[in-house]
Image (cartoon, rainbow, N blue to C red):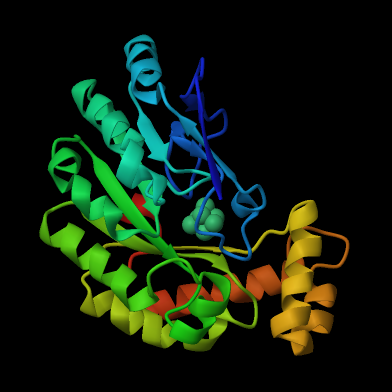
Length: 266
Ligand code: SF4
């Protein structure tokens, strides 16, 4: 993994169509690419992490010029990957978000977010969503081997909520034939850890990601190659009937476990 500091001209990206899943008006990514290397994610294809060294300075100007709204921090690349321990760009950006009274939604898989509880408490309306593909340690170890194990991620959610910072879980991406295996265990754990909301979305395989993911399947789970080929035939999304069926099943579970689905419900 290589690290390269870059000087940027702009950081804040305005979302043109309202984002219903993460409820954001803007996105911000302090780093380009991601060290965690989850096997389903194209953020890890490039082995150079670009560190936007003047990010805090740039966002300060942008926050003064733009209408207030919610900023999704880490919309594409994890804002609490290891580089953040050294560069602290995410922390500096959050300080600016707090100073200019914007709200935010942080997406991460890392417990480094706990370092910044003091700043998060100062932000007017802050959510932290922790994502995973399964509560099952073995599944997670194959697909997300550089990230802390799922149960430890649930503990981050618990700690944040105990500090009055709203935090929930995202089963994103939902990996067909893998994520469906321990959903009830995940929902039980969700309740035990006092998570506030649950988000889910199926796996998308765009461009080279599809070819790469099929190679992974072939290596670790050859038995699923045919099934995935059928599911993702001619598209980056699973076929419509699968999406509909999976969504219905998820909603049924969420009702059964009295779990709020989506950020708009909390
Ligand atoms: S932590 Fe997130 S951004 Fe990083 S490789 Fe994994 S899924 Fe991609």
